[in-house]
Amino acid sequence: MPKFIINGQKKLSGQIAVKGAKNSALKIIPAAILSEDTITINNLPDIEDISQSFALLIDLGAKVERDGATAKINTQDLKITELPDKLADKFRSSIIFVGPLLARFGEAKFPHPGGCVIGAGQRPIDLFLEGFKAFGATVSEDGSCYHVKAKQLKPAHFFFPVVSVTVTESLMMTATLIPGRTVLENCALEPEIVALADYLNSQGAKISGAGTSTIIIDGVAKLSAGIFNVIPDRIETGSFAIMAAATGSDMKITDCRPEHIRSLLTVFDKIGVPYESGSDWLHVKPAKTIKPYGIKTHEYPGFPTDLQSPYVVLMTQAHGSALIQETIYDRRLLWTDMLSQMGASVTLCDPHRIVVNGPACLIGKRLISPDLRAGIALVIAALIAQGTTEIDNIYQIDRGYEKLDERLRLLGADITRVA
Image (tube, rainbow, N blue to C red; front, side, top):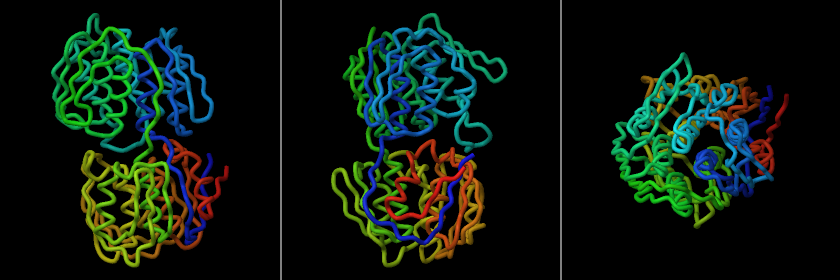
């Protein structure tokens, strides 16, 4: 299995372009199932989860033509409605295929989805199943396999007891082909949801309220397909911004939308990280001193849980103590034990809270990436650290960051991928 070898304390400089949003691309691919026409997707990131999504679609019988960052998908001949174990258990977003399959064919079979090991045990899918039941589907379970089926789906008035991005997107897609009016309340507000709804509306769907807490869908009989341009990845934008701040580097981030990370930029204002921004670029400059500042993760537009891990690394370089509170996922702070091994002063208060004391002199170690976002955090820590750091299990990092080592070398990082 490949790993990263990183020699730290190299100043980064130059420009780095943000790729297409993983969490947008992973939803538009299964959305192709809703139409028998051909969809063209542009600005696709070259990451593991996208490759797995295409492999899954092909296994179901779809035709996929990919040329770099562009792909054409046609699902006209798609007949299979059972997600293969060998693919579905590798990435969390495999469950997003269930709603479109249910809407078009009236059933779907799938194993418990895989992905990052965060949350208490396996990440629950109860909310997905409750939503499908609200549409009139029956759900049966045989071991680790679920079977969702309905002779005739019906519109629903569904209130999310817990805000969920993926469930919001899943139920929104499912409802587009259900006759009648569906009302979804307490929805997630993420930009990726708005992008998906805008595309579906351009192809004949009737969705209003995307980006607000209430989404209304009036079902239609048929959807066409067209061109979807994947929006820039706001989590990658934030990761690179934090990387620049933590390493004291002068870095310009291009092809991004700074308005999507306003929560992070507001924190930069508080901790003394200077930056300039435009509509599609962000220039982060070295801070004279980084001030400590505690954050509490929250659904969009609050501080993203996916930026919590990199931000913890940034706080190891702050002058003082910061309380970090993770409110979205259980076990997402356990990776900080590896940060402590590198010399950071991190106190675990409980599974949801840590206190970071800085500034700390980090030392290179041999580490294993436990999940995608902790993986990029370890890369940032390695860039700060004295000496050499080895990071194993970088498959997790490749799931969300395209050719990270190649792009960082262009900024001056001493990072190598080895078998």
